[in-house]
Length: 143
Ligand code: FES
Image (cartoon, rainbow, N blue to C red; front, side, top):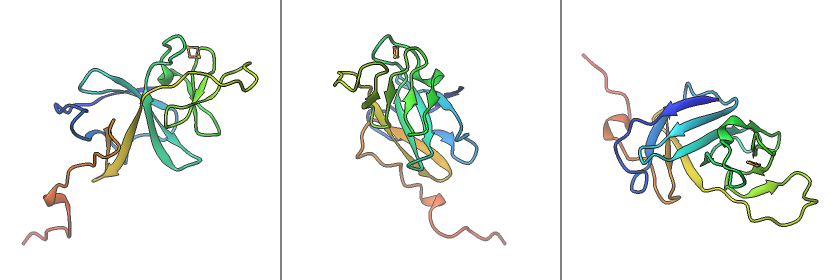
């Protein structure tokens, strides 16, 4: 739906990087994000779990862009091509017409934190947004 360019020069492999102003990113639809390492990510708000989710923006079935899909009432992203659904962990939750059989589909997922009115993303669950001293604590009163 919306395409966002992440303007950070750090590698997503080493740092959690900011990609959006959390006050202005719409919680409707799915956003496409370009990471500094050229990976494309689909980001959406899960209304059910009240959290941001992010997965690789490429369906493992026929490589359709998941960011062009829809968010289901269950909070999953639904591929626009054949309708396979993935949760925020990248696990396939539904393959239409498969009668619930196990499948091998999975997409890489990312971790999102909100801090300093920014959304930060990483592929490592142990990464945290950096601590920015000037933004911590009480606001400074100017004379
Ligand atoms: S390409 Fe995504 S379900 Fe087929």
